[in-house]
Length: 326
Ligand code: UDP
Image (cartoon, rainbow, N blue to C red; front, side, top):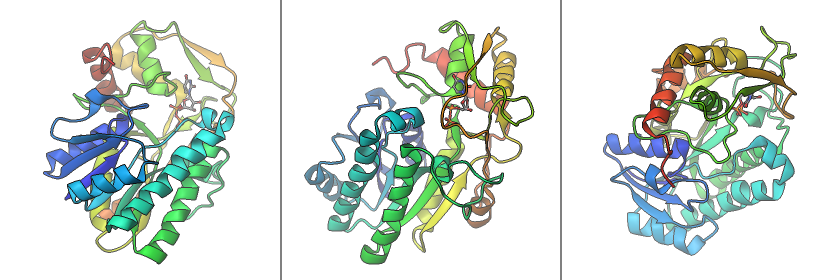
C-alpha cells in the first residue's frame, strides 16, 4: 500500500515507517521536523519537510505519491505543556488535523489511522480501561486528541473517510535503528536510563502517596514495535469499517518505582530515586484493556515483559550516545 505517515520522523512514527517498509509498503513521511529528526526517517522512505497547515503542499504530496492511506502521528503530546499553552495544542492537534482531512477529502484518500491517547479517558473510573468507558479528558492534550476523534466520525458520515483511532498507553523501547529522543525529555523510561548512564544525577518519582501498591503511579508500558504493528493491522481493517482501539499490554501495569528497579537490574547501574511532588494531571493508574484489538485484529504484543522493553531502550541509548546527532 502507498502510505503517507505524518510525524514519521518522530519516535513512534519512525518505527511505524520502518515496519511498513519491512512489509513492502511504500512510505512518504510528512514532517516539519520541529520535533522529529531527519536521521530517524528510515532509508527507503520519502520525506516531505512541510507544515500540515499547508494544504497545497499536502495535496501535492498525496497526488505525487498516489497515497492510498494516511497514518497521522504528527502532534504535540505533552500533558503539562498543553495546560500552559492550549493554543499550540488546538493548532497542532485539531487545526492541522482538519487541514489534513480536507486535503485527503479533496484528493480522494479515504483511509486514516490516527494516533490517539489514553489521555482521552481522563481519570478513569475503573481499570483496565475499555474503549466504551467515558472519555472525560482532564487536559488540552487529551481534549484535542478526542476532538479530532469526534471530527473523524463526522468526516466519515459526510465524506466517507474511514479511520482507526488507536489510543496509546505508554510507548517505550526501541529498535536497533530508532529510539526515543525528546528535548527536553519528560518520559519516565528515558529519564531513568539517562540517570543510569550518568547523564542526570537522579530520578524524581512524582508522588509516592497514590493509592497504588507502592504509592507511585501505575502505567501500562507497550513496546514501540508492538504499537507499530497495530497500525499496520489497523490499515487493513479500514477496508471494511472504522474503529477505536486501546493499545497497551494490560495486566497489572508497573509502578514508577518498579520501572526504576527493572532499569537497575537491566543496566547493572545505581539509579538514585527521590520522591518529588505529584505531577499535575497524572491519574494514579492507567492500564488498558486491549481485548478488543486482540479479538478483532488478532494483535498481540511480542514484548509483554517490561525488562525486554527497557533492555531495548538501553541498547539504543548506548549505541546512540548523541541521539540522532542533530
Ligand atoms: N514520572 C516520574 N518521574 C519522571 C517522569 C515521569 O515519576 O521524571 C512518572 C509520571 O508521573 C507517570 C509515569 O512516570 O506516572 C509515566 O510518565 P511519562 O511522562 O513517561 O508518561 P505519561 O504517563 O505521562 O504518558
